[in-house]
Length: 375
Image 1: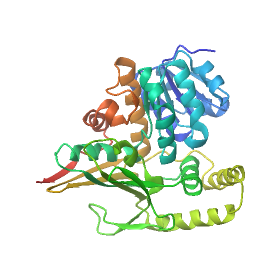
Image 2: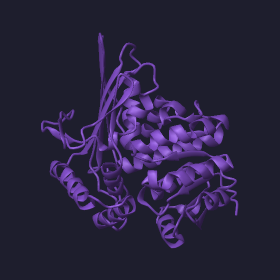
Image 3: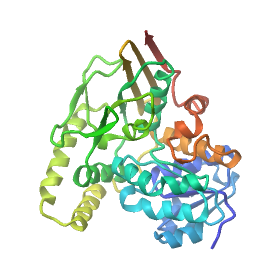
Image 4: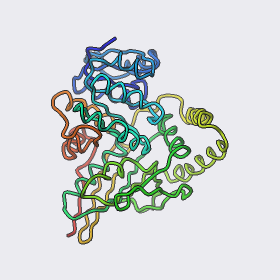
């Protein structure tokens, strides 16, 4: 049946979904919390402080395009947190297109983004709908920093890195393994996708404000090469990501290599089943709530051109809360006015990088950017 709620949080039983519900409550936006297990969704939403102060509804829905469209009909915005998105995202995007709703997700799957742009971008644009993927701390904050650098003309190369302190979730582990086993990771070189070496392992990187050298990975390629591929200002983009915990970063390639060895010769269905099993073993319960004194984040972008350089660093805390707030901000904007760009567009293209930064600052989740420019 249709809903009278204009905003849907799909995957509300997950950690990020629950946090999005928290920020929708702070915005005073009524919402529909949906998922595949009514009890889990209800328990997660019930744990939101002050949830009784905002109108909301909890529903269970079958994960098919038809069922999702029937349940979500009447909504204007669907905030999707159900991943891995290359496996579970198409049904949600198709449902949004069917009912005429804007779509956002929190994905970190470059192959999914490239596929979505080709399959659905034009159709969403024709209907005046926004299709924005990768609306998350790991991607959007770096994109904000990159756009701040690009306010200086003449820069065409972006060197991006993101670091954070946090707990792995089932979804994030599943995404890492799915990317590694079933998809290539690309960087951008002269506006063409170039694959990262599959067996390269970790990269030594200089982390601003730290004496110790950090370790990072291409992390599936990230969304940045996709967003900037058609940006006339930019020709080259490389992005790396990692956690501050060096021992954990050293273990990630070993975990991935071991999983790939076990999956050698298996069918795609068998590989996905094994990925689900491995992911569930990482953390089966809801992660502990983030602590701003512990769960910090850092995004750094070096932008360069033939005769210019800029460096922007954004320090923050609680990366999952940043992700949730960004999605709530998107919903609030889309309920009041059309996005700046329709169809396949990044959050910065749709809402403005300075506006997104202002919201994060207003809620105390990031510091004012540190910017150095040399011409």
